[in-house]
Length: 82
Image (cartoon, rainbow, N blue to C red):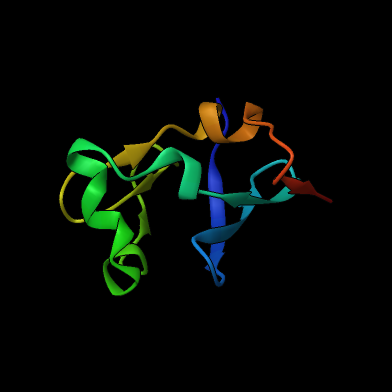
């Protein structure tokens, strides 16, 4: 199971993630948010209220979350891995 152990919120709805295995990647969340429960995340100040949930994924106070396995495997032209 993948786990996020640290993160940093960047500009433009991007988050730098660090996984337990040492991999780091920047994900642009803008394409992943904006409808339904995730519409609150379009408010930049609310987006910054992200935290790491008990299972190692990301979550917001409204219950919106992203599984660490999804984030680890997620690829797009906007993902930067290191």
